[in-house]
Amino acid sequence: MASEFELIARYFTPAAPGPDAGVPLGVGDDCALLAPRPGRRLAVSVDTSVANVHFPADAPAEAIGYRALAVSLSDLAAMGAEPRWCLMALALEKDDEAWLAGFAGGFHALCQSSGTALVGGDVTRGELAVGVTVMGEVPAGEELTRRSARAGDVLAVTGALGGGAGGLALWQRGERDLSHPLLTRYLKPTPRLAAGLALRDLAHAAIDISDGLLADLEHILAASGVGARLEPEALPLAAGLSEALGESAAYRAALCGGDDYELLVSLPGSVLKEAQRRLAGQGLALTPIGTVCVEAGVSGVELGGAHGWQHFRGGKP
Image (cartoon, rainbow, N blue to C red; front, top):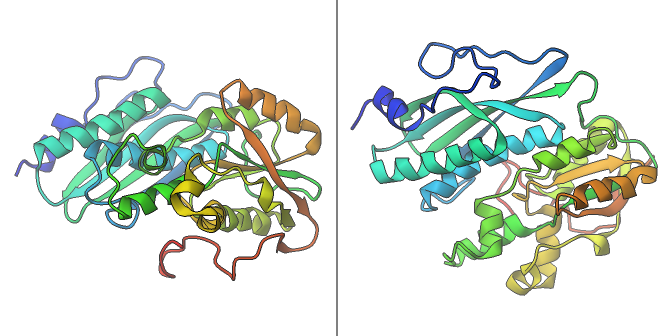
């Protein structure tokens, strides 16, 4: 098996970044040196993806590499931050050249399309897992957080819901046609980076939907000290979800299935049409699904207490 240094040099040392990348020193030293732009705050997030917990171990390597970065970039999208840099730590059981080439290809492809420079990381031997730290920039005072939702705000979501859970269900049934839109939603989610930037000056609060709509909504409500009333009939379901799962399961997947990586935002009703106009220019819908209210808790839905994914408390619904 090649050493970790050989693997890093072979698969995870990109070409020298350009002069505007803000990377005085990248891969190959004890630390990277980064240069944030003046007047910007640094937004940093880390996610660990574990085989057979966050993705199937037998999924295509290219999708695993892409997905590991995508789920971390989604956090930057929720804060309205522009991605700049990332670190990646990979644990794998053996030196499989074809698998590594596929993984690196998926990871680097998303780095390139999102404007994210890989500036360091680690490769070690162990059970398959990927840790990705992303760093982005946001103008000081313009960042979106979870703590500023206000009573009277409209709650709205980008795109459609339930596709991640639907794709996982199909994979578990043996579906392997990677062109299936639900499998694409699950294995190669799209981080809504452009949407986060477009909504930065309109929304009061935002979060990305990784653990399920209800679970992530509750994070906003707890941080903001408010409640919400949802309109379940307004939930935008992913294409083909009802046909794949049935209407009841599709509704449940949209509310608490997780792995959608859409944005949930709280914004004044007076700016909703402008927000929708901006996202329509990106080919993306923004659908109002409820309102923020003074009374604590979430009303309008009944699911018997199941709210989404939580580690150490059982699996996905």
